[in-house]
View 1 (cartoon, rainbow, N blue to C red):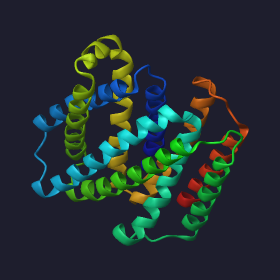
View 2 (cartoon, rainbow, N blue to C red):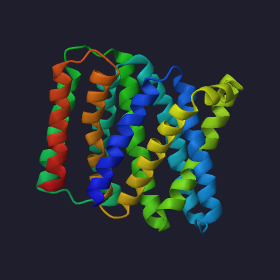
View 3 (cartoon, rainbow, N blue to C red):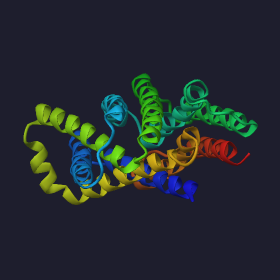
View 4 (cartoon, rainbow, N blue to C red):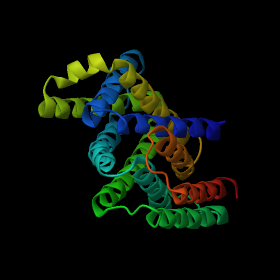
Length: 274
């Protein structure tokens, strides 16, 4: 059941990233997503037991990493094709989580996880040499995004386990992160966010619900199964992203990208089932 929920979260993640990529204003679109999370987070905090103060450092550190992640994500999508940069950022992250997990979370690597990791590396190399060359700037931002994903995954995974209340932890994460993003956006764009929200509230609400629901589901899964397994299984979103980029966003679709993404998913399968 946990794995099915993470797969659904992976699909939700690919869809909301595609919606942000396809929006006419990526900063305001992302701001609206976080605004939805801020409102929902406040409701949960007001109606649920409080989070222990000892857990707040995890929330603050994870939120700080999220701010850097959003900056890298927006620039990645501005500079590169969704179906190309998304697999790189999402495919590299589980390798970093697995490596860090050995030292910080003490995950025991099985033979299948080793094979799966090698296959993911192969998939990433195939992506790097796919038909369309990737320029240096989007590549740098995609790699930086991967490090951010690995960072907040590990910090939140440890924090949510210690909290014993995944929903309240997720709510505080949304409130802190949402407040920061909203203040940044208001500083950069003033009241444009209000007019954007009135025009695009349906698009923004759908994107927000998918983003918040998917990540909350992943946080819950981290309390049930190893963090590295959740991190890796979420990356099945790579395949969904490749399909969204090629068939929905009408990006130039190189068959090499789909093949490379398929290799990554085979690696993910080995990590989980071997």
